[in-house]
Image 1 (cartoon, helix red, strand yellow):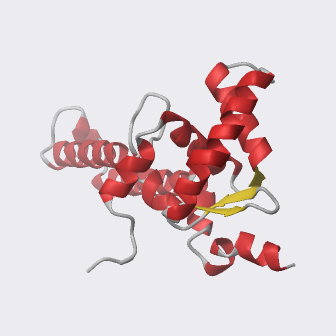
Image 2 (tube, rainbow, N blue to C red; image 1 turned 180 degrees about the vertical axis):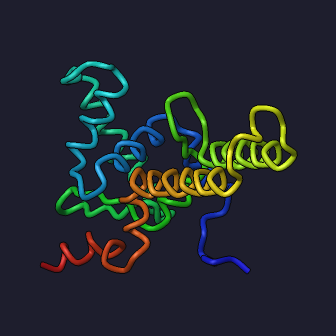
Length: 186
């Protein structure tokens, strides 16, 4: 049984991620963590594409046009963003997390969270076994101390992951998910 039965199918996620500009737009929206205007988003994406700050006007205009004509409507259609055409504002919605799960990395080196947790688990278990089997250097370490340090490392890593993904996590709660909708009514 799925926790969320409405999760985006992998095929839709792959279609969304197939376009580099769309990936950059989602990345920038995730880093902002709130409501952003189309103009602001186009500037952020153009800055990222060109590496220039501020980006050239021609590039900003090109990004703006492609976002408005192609990418934002597609992302809104599958429920990844909430796009208010009147105010030209965008906010990630609940399904943005479904897409982010396919692109999530810990560091620029390309390590995913699952790889990090696996490495931490294997290393902790290997060292604990070495301690329990009284391997030469490892025997000097108290197994309870090592287990406590390992659990602490998992806890700190989990806390860091929650902090890095705080905007995505907050959108899972009703107030975060309806943020843009409630602002529209005001």
